Image (cartoon, rainbow, N blue to C red; front, side, top):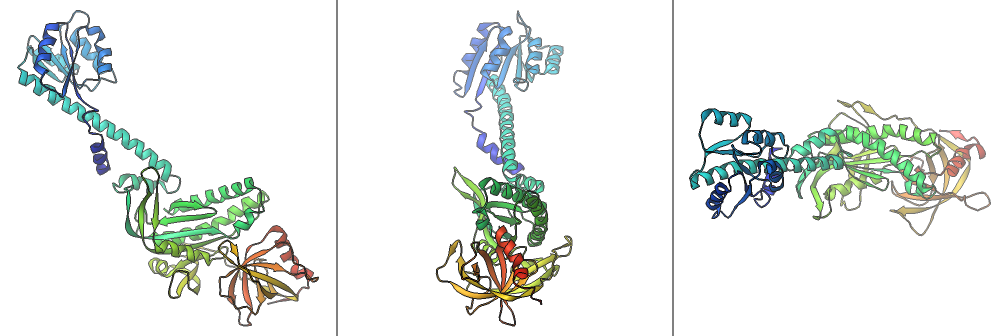
Length: 497
């Protein structure tokens, strides 16, 4: 905090803002003329004079002196009373007062000091003494004004930090940013952190089917719930991107256990989705599924932008890798990189290890499907084994590969053979060899050769021993869900497997 203050103090120590200004209050103009002549060669000292003691307070407020030379014996208001007035005035309470009197009487001097005077001189003093005292008292007062201005600026700055960061990080993190002299420095530094990317599955399709005001209501409730959870685990929300959230752990304030906090936070966020979907159900909105990817590694973190517009952020390959890992998730899944796994240690409960080859990576990497964390957090995701029903009457399907937001030309064909009891998973047989985690959009063919109007979005899962392709539905409209749920009953009870 002191280093921040010293920097801000250096920014406001401009003598043009706080000049040396002498205000002399004396009913004898000849004395004022003498003092003015003594100061005429001091170019940095401004001299002001008030002959009427009754007007002294108003003149002092207007001139904003750095020192007041005050006579004691005056016809309207005597000097002692005027000292009381100065000290009772908020704007003048700290201005140095140098009493100038024709006599040097110990009792009078003691009384002026008791009332709040800073110094006492017998008039007229020598020129060198007068200038030295003026400079001495003005220097102290100007330093006080500069410090007050610096602290005022610091309070404004801290308020800004709390308003900006306080929405996205915990109060503890905000306090540490404010205390750190480097918390908001322009530029960046290389730092090892954990990066979390979350995204709602199939939200793009959902947003095309709901009214804009409903989309905003759904997102606001979702973001509110996720923000509360992220703050709980000392994460820093970098941005909301559509329906996605980018979060840092270990920046801007370093914490050694950032990977552990990131993983625990992700599990807590998935558990929080139960409340989010309960809120959606109560209002007739569809349920949401979220995928989360986490990576740990070195990035460049700091303030990015220009003088006029700047944001705290991070850049680097490890940010991109976190996004790639998230893209492999299905609803309710938390996938982490090997670096994150190694940093967290053996307190993880891992369901599966997946070998993937993300874009921009030359060799395959392992990512881990985490369903729980032990240690201080003790968080577990509910894991219900999915049972599949084999349909007696198989369903002809046609599907296209989806890359990003684009649907590729050229379709593939297959047969939907099994349906999961959660209505979110299925199995198909297809001659097309598609890699795991490929995103597809499916059209279901009716017996008459026509296609169901509603499309199903899915992600290719593992291939079974029998050669079936696993499917995870990522976006299913209400109409599609109803039809999927009725497939088994409409086409025969089938056989559970």
